[in-house]
Image (tube, rainbow, N blue to C red; front, side, top):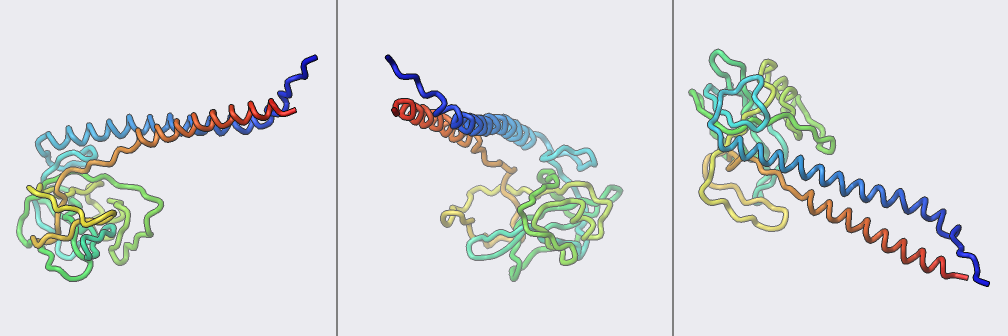
Length: 242
């Protein structure tokens, strides 16, 4: 007479294993959705970089290519973020550009050292071009210090208020000045040393966010497959026990 199969031995563990499998598959699917979103963003950025620049307006879409003329407001500057280039600690320099007959515009002029270095501050009319940088949200960033004009997350409204320009447009123009040859990285997790050119150092190209979502999706699905294999092997062993 054959002995009954001890299914109850794996029923309870199944109720634990199945939700874990669902979570792993859900994370993989979420990363595939993020992949499509990131590909769409990259496509929009490439298209924006190829279009001619337009005059900044209140309804300018994020990352649109824009150009403006005006005068930098004396003393209206803030430092954004924190970045080491070579061995020099610096941040992004945000200034207010007053435009005749138009709303003021925040301008991300580029990287400048926090201490030392001669930062150029044009007094006459200037022309700047680049892309529209939208407000960002980073709950993990350090707390901003508006009183000292020190910011770690780009919040156009907060920076404009700190610089006395409450009527500024709700984004910044990030200056882009292409460079023929990019400096080589100095090591893992490092940034090239600052050039000997004028400061601040503007961005060299439109932003190109990293796209690692496909790799993440493969990882989650592989973990799900491994989880299934482990559970099957464990179940067989469990059922074979007398």
